[in-house]
Image (cartoon, rainbow, N blue to C red):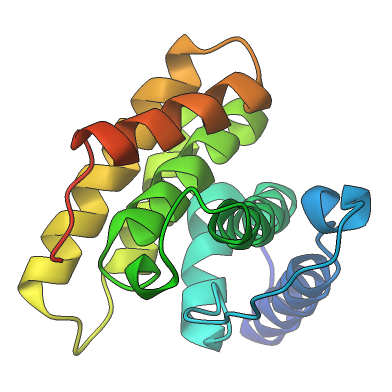
Length: 177
């Protein structure tokens, strides 16, 4: 039976590994980008809070947690591209159609990469933060679920992106604007 000191050291090692995996998560969309980003936007930083990282690691493990972080980065980059291409107005990046697209696509990507159940664990933990207005949380949870449904149905990440874009445009996704 491990001693309390051994348990603490093990937890510290897992935490250090998780932070390393989280920070080193690949951003496939940003690496593959061929055109410059015109609009810089950093509304949310998925996982900058050590408590959120720990909750993510506890829920899905360090590898899948890092994969979820990579999906968030890719969804953010895709959202900026969609705005640059004129698919959504810039002022919709918070509580508007672009914001809904980002949440939808993040959850679709996580569904493709780590499965829908783990995607829900990560996304629900992300939305469960103090100070978030109830209407925003409700909107985000809805758009996250739509993204997981799309990710489960679609055959590829590209198809999920198209379907999340359509869902944002046709009103399937919730907005506050």
